[in-house]
Image 1 (tube, rainbow, N blue to C red):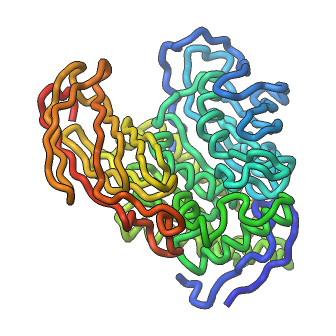
Image 2: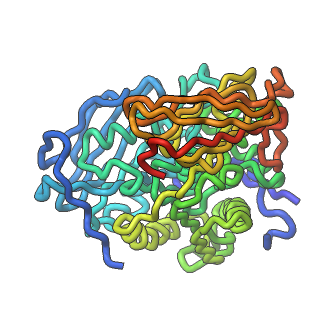
Image 3: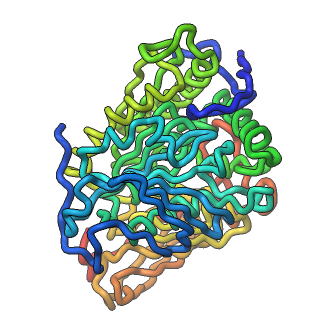
Length: 492
């Protein structure tokens, strides 16, 4: 049965109301050296912050030798937000050195400065060759944006396209302004509470961007388990109404008509996208631990119990599907800053080892998405279908071919596997039959293929029908297997 938490606004990670508590049966090295490489553009020893990638710099404050606060404005959000940045202590004295980046997210009702002021981030990373980027994940300490492009772009908060800001704009802006290792091997993401959802949803939706992801008392399941989904719906509705001052369903849409949108952003539904990434989960049951006052805070106990269920649900599904996850369930602890401070301290040591020896990307590409167009691991898929959001799956993607499941027809652009100008034999097999075509690689070595899928899709509500707790399948779609001859290939 559910227990209801009192609505409150605090500076620890989640400030929520009507949150579903636990249910009966709850039991459900040394720092690596930064890489040095010749800079690809003129650089100065000290950081400079200028406009790039849709971001306008409003102001810059240097708060101490390592710490900067940059106020930025973007059309994706419609109003300025802050980005707190920590650079390595030797950043100015090693102008030829490029550094890995940790994107670190706060929780509900937090702000960009939280990890510095409350979480010890500056002290924890003082000796590390690491850039830490901590953006606002909401406006002026409100409930936060839940790391998604809002369905309703007309609320009093403006467009609230948080994923566009964090992924499409902030990451390339950081790479343009700082001496970063600007690829997957030099980039990680982590967050607490709502920010733990953010770190895992971004990792699952954009796995080619990050080599590691971590969640501290996070919510990596907001949909897959029906009981957890009910609690997540209550929490997010409360965030919208009581903290953000907007109507319910503004973020992800209605569970009735937009359930597929919830699924398409849920890390547990998308867990197969995370193969090859180093994943770290930190959680406790909400029972008082060594850092709690006497008497302990009941809200901090209840919220941690809730995120514990969400974290374990994600972990269990990952285990079932053979996806390695490092789980630290320390049992005794509440939803409060002393534990997240310790979580970060424990995470950064293995993180630096991961940066020094990054895991190889998957040998073949498999990726699932509800988006009409997506690009991952060098593959680009654009689908023509009646509904903007429906499931598609690309599996076993390699130079010899791939399988695509979905509805409508797809334009697939392969990675640069082939000799530019070479003509390849492409065989497509599906329920509609078998056909063979010749396709010529473009000047960069990509093939551009039109792939028919047997299902035309069903327009309207039924076309995007999705059920909580049922992983998405393109029920009215088809499957096409594409085989590509080895002629002219430059890699496997």
